[in-house]
Amino acid sequence: MLLRISASIVGLGALAAGPLLLAQAPAPKKDVAKVWTDVCASCHGASMQGAQAPSMLDDTWVSGNGDDAALASTIKNGRVPTGMPAFGTLLNDEDIRAMVVYIRETAGKAKAAGAGYAAPAANVVVQSEKHAFKLETVLEGVTAPWGLDFLPDGRMLITEKGGALRIADAKGVLAAEPVQGVPAVWSKGQGGLLDVAVHPDYAKNGWIYLSYSDPGENDSAMTAVIRAKLNGNALVEVQQLFKAPAATYRTANVHFGSRLVFDGKGHVFFSIGERGQQDDAQTVTRPNGKVHRINEDGSIPTDNPFADKADAIKSIWSYGHRNPQGLTMHPTTGALYDVEHGPRGGDELNLVEKGKNYGWPVITYGMNYNGTPMTDKTAAPGMEQPLTYWVPSIAVSSIGFYTGGKFPAWKGNLFLGSLAAQELRRLELTPTGVKQEVLFKNVGRLRDVVMGPDGAIYIAFNQPDRIARIVPASATGTSAAANQAR
Ligand code: HEC
Ligand SMILES: [Ca+2]
Image 1: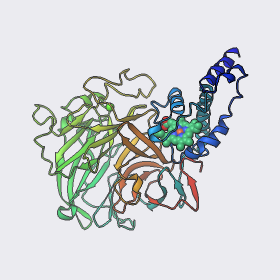
Image 2: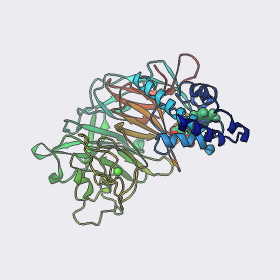
Image 3: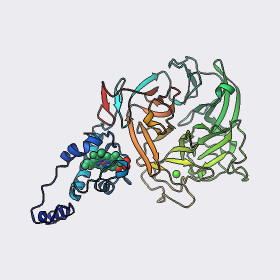
Image 4: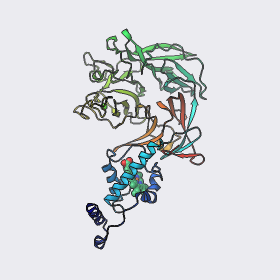
């Protein structure tokens, strides 16, 4: 008791309140819920859901590692350049401590109520930090859609993990018959028909690229890449662009990657997971656990980092990756980014650069699935750090930069879909760190996130299986604040 009183006297002293106050009884403790409503709600939202300032409910933090001390420091000292005022004169250390507990408690309650996030149903407007939007279903009738891309005439190509390539017209009407001539795939576990990517000059050359789990000897498989042209409802002129040596195929049914990315300069990047063989990620004689770069015709660029290394897989661009299921290129800088699934904890966003080692399994922010440590190392010389990571894992699946015109304030932001957490996140990559907003949650597993030619953001969902898109909406009418109970 004595300690508490003296602590609050010290706190009062820090208030620059004048010496007279010191002699008096401590000021009544502040009701932090009232402070929130009176002072904080105008920026952070009445129920902490976020408004022009970030949500407190989404487990993403700009303050250091988001622990209590980091939040307390932000409240006390502010983050003035980015718009958070300092409250160290209004609130003493004790008040601030209570405020942090109040924030944790409110977030905990929101989580327990399964609320805390928008789960937009049809025609419900979500008010997020920068734009109001609706999530609308484009088509159903696909089974486990995995990859999605657009032909110049607006038609959609959709891969189904089971091995079918589907076409829908620009209105979302799905052709009943899958496209003929798709290669046989090894459809087990995480394997199957994976990504589809339409060549940026499709109108001129007609090339469509596919990545898939290629069946090998003795029930083994490895990710492979083809390209082909669409003639009526069939793939023709199929060319094998990447196929790893048979001896490198692996029998596990996990971690195939894979996404395809064109750099517009004649190259195609694609990712392969480590196929459940962690150590393979560290050796360039193995194709798995890597990001690869090939020329658009499948030949090896002479400036690839391991092009001259005996025994290396010459298409390797970077290594030490676990399971990169998201890969994308910044529309103006040309920088390449991946997201990869960590083990239990430690999903990563990486800036992927030539010849670099991204550390798996030597360094990681995750642990083994049984709860035992994988390694105590999160950093090591010669190994790259992620730009950010997620503990616990959200199961990162796909990323894409917003390039359209429908959401001007989102331009250049990175959109990230997740499987287990079922979230669409908006990421701002700033020089001081990655700022995140959860746009919605809990309406299915997000398998692919793609910028549509119409400026909408298209999402391939699993469970329930469908293609949906995010379109602008006016904030009035049936409205649900982002991050608020639905
Ligand atoms: C004028 C608008 C404004 C008001 C009022 C305001 N904040 Fe903030 N706050 C912000 C902004 C903007 C940020 C994000 C700063 C950044 O991105 O660096 C922020 C960040 C924070 C953070 C850090 C969140 C994180 O992700 O790490 C906490 C905690 C916080 N505010 C608490 C409060 C509390 C408590 C109050 C009331 C006493 C309050 N804020 C009042 C604008 C405001
Ligand atoms: Ca890593």
